[in-house]
Amino acid sequence: MPISCRDIASHYFKKGAQIEISSDDDDLNGSWFAGTVIRPPKGRSNKVLVEYATLVEEGPDRRPLREVLDLVQLRPPPPLENRAAFKSDEFVDAYHDDGWWEGFITQVAGPGRDTYKVFFPRSKEQMEFKAAQLRPHRDWVEENGTWDPPLEEEEEEEKPNTTADEKIPFSPEMEVNEDAIEHQFSPGEEVEVSFDDEGFEGSWYAATVLKKIDGGKYLIEFQNLTNEDGTVLREEIDGLQMRPQPPDIGLVDRFDVHEEVDVWFNDGWWAGTISKVLKIERYTVYFKNTDNELKFEHSELRVHQDWKNGKWYIASKVQHLISYDSRLSLF
Image (cartoon, rainbow, N blue to C red; front, side, top):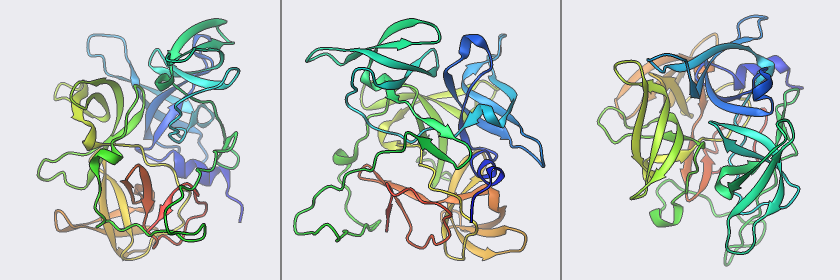
């Protein structure tokens, strides 16, 4: 059954969803800025209230900028692609002035230098960037919820004593080598952050990496958490408390009892398990860490994914994906 644009919009642009925002301003043409959906579209309206992650209002308070925009100005964040190198004439997005700007590579640095010159056709400027400040350029196809050009299939790593048809299943109890899975985050990258504090176990909060600092830590800015005075919360976080933003794996038409989910609650995503399926797309979710149950709308849930050894894994019990990202692994 074909997926309607309205179904795609309700999935990708629900309350709390991480997005990228384009602007009608002439000075900002060809740029995308990270943000969050504050109020999704209702009924036949295409208007969305969004909050920028890196742009702030003028004035002493420096509050995150909020705007009411059309759906056509929004898209999900492109999937994270760790590229160590780029080629001449390749179309890329470069992170500059708190956003991603469309351009193409005009010059590749020589051996031993990790720099590229990028030309921006709209402003007719050329600037120099490191590989960590670049990403492959992709366009969001709103009609079917895909990326153009299509995402490259990840090559299967050969494992000893396994054939091409054999897969080693993942178990959450498998021993993890923390050194092997350390991920290097880049400025501007959207991430999720966990806390060790009592009462926050199993929750993840959206943030944007501002810069890397000493000791394996990063300065990050939360997208939905603020200080007591209302200013944006910034903290230095150990890289082991961070993970890339989970990829969108497709639309889910329903969840079943005992299925693992993440719930949007108190400005973050909380891991839980479906304990009851109620009427009118509502569920009761059990939270193991706090030993309590709460009721939620279908739109407030997402498929639970785990970040292990540099890959995303989802539970094999998920049976109702309308579409599926083949780069993920089931366990």
